[in-house]
Length: 65
Image 1 (cartoon, helix red, strand yellow):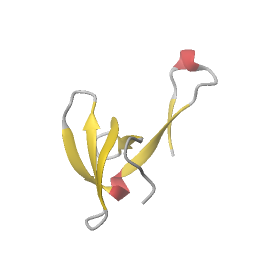
Image 2 (spheres, rainbow, N blue to C red):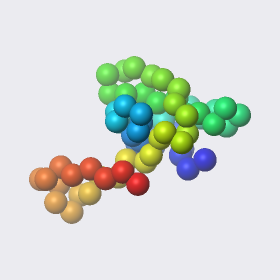
Image 3 (cartoon, rainbow, N blue to C red):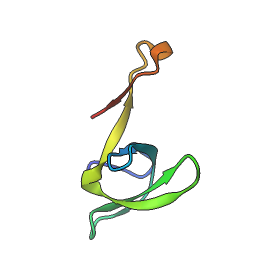
């Protein structure tokens, strides 16, 4: 699994950003909490790390790996 608890991630299914709260290795799922407080279990394959390009933060560009 490429993620750790506390990682900032993107759910590619709904394009929402959140943080990893829990990891279920047996089911290969991550529990993600979004900024509005909602949590959900998401399959690992639908989750990507959130990378922020701070070289020109004024453009507020976001990159998914």
